Length: 95
Image (cartoon, rainbow, N blue to C red; front, side, top):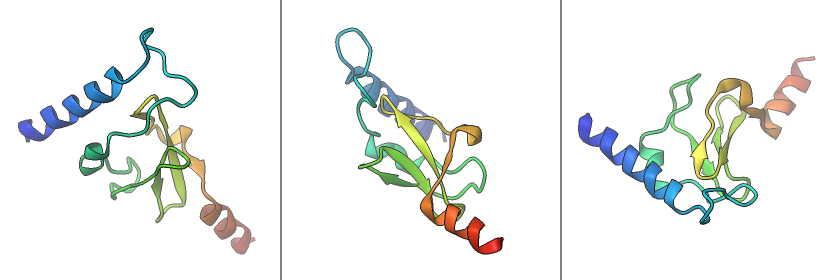
């Protein structure tokens, strides 16, 4: 388990090191380090997430939510997740 933790930390450091000279990313910044997907799960369902490179988000298809990736770092606080189109359609069908 310790080895997996070190791998995740190393991947985060590489992602953070790819920022500009001032330490600030431009716009949404770099995308997610692909090796991190092995370690990341949805904090609500504990299921694996899919990385949507075009939107720079981690998507939970089951719940219909997406977490933003900012400067290469996933923001997986449930309150910051947005509903995906699938989630919005499911809500409309229930009404």
